[in-house]
Image (tube, rainbow, N blue to C red; front, side):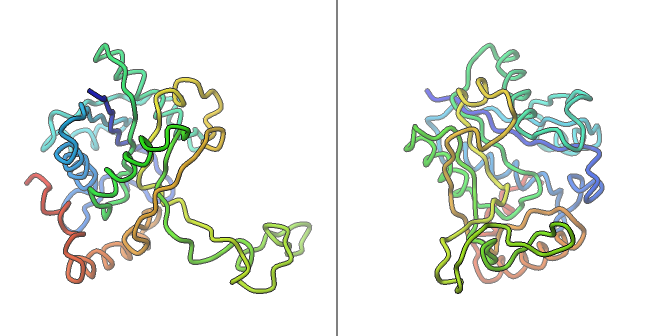
Length: 253
């Protein structure tokens, strides 16, 4: 039986949007949406052995999560992994090593579900996982959405006080540019091999695959404005695309 570790990772000291992992979203704790998605994945994949863990340095987040989901394994994040510039992959590696120690086992894949992505669907989690399995050359698969802006035409960087292209090119129309995608940080699927062998914490050192999601439903919450916008989008999607409300309906009360 294949073994999968699902992780939720949340720092206490997020500076971009303070205490964002503790926010209520449409009347329910934000973290519960990812936990309900994880439960849905387990139901969709009965032939897979799944453990869920929370890696955090926040006692408040631990309290929220374990109140309704007491089976979640809590991993105390050490201080050296709590800094602003610590690669998130280092936290994934810490979660994998600690859970394998506790369970005396080896997982085949680690799936990270970002706490600040409440509108992912269970089918997205399963879809990204299946894509990783069907493409064994990939070290990881991450979720993306079609980019609304392209670095070829819509972005610039400031160099010595003057604007320059982000990517050197000679395209004159957007239609000439290759398609690009936003990494929405909602889902990451890692092979155990990549996590145990990587020493840089740099995702792009691996062979990467992409799983495309419905773009309007996914906005990474990194500010108060993102939060307001995501709640407005959620209310619209619940009314017009009922499938987006299924994870919310499955949350434990």
